[in-house]
Length: 144
Image 1: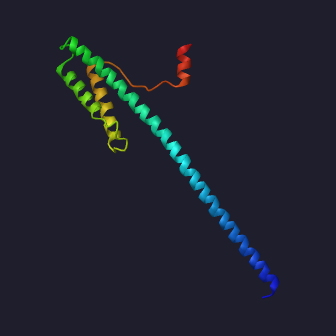
Image 2: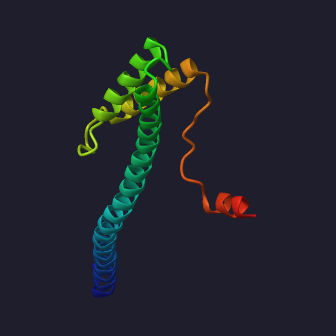
Image 3: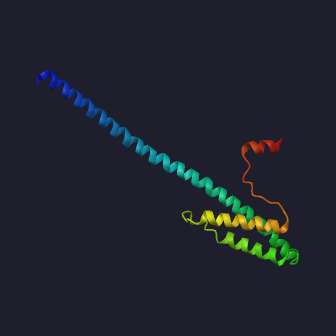
């Protein structure tokens, strides 16, 4: 092998090594930045989701408060079946683990609360639905 081909081989090898080192450096930078932005996005999603769940549970609690006020004023206003379903709904909401965000049962528990709420509403023959916080476009429409 002559010195020219040896120099060309060294040049190619250095070029490949430089390319690989730049790739590794870029990967490390991207990974580090991804961890930071992933945590920030995760925190934001968690905050929004927690707020939405709290708002929905608050809606159900408000309905229960109204129904319990009616029961205090007139215990015979609702059938015993309806009163029992209201009590069960209240217990479901009270048992919801607000301070345990990693509890794997929260989604099923929320579904059970929604189902029991629909049962109470059906027994009362009222149509109540939690529709969430209106979006900014909905607020503009209402204001007109």
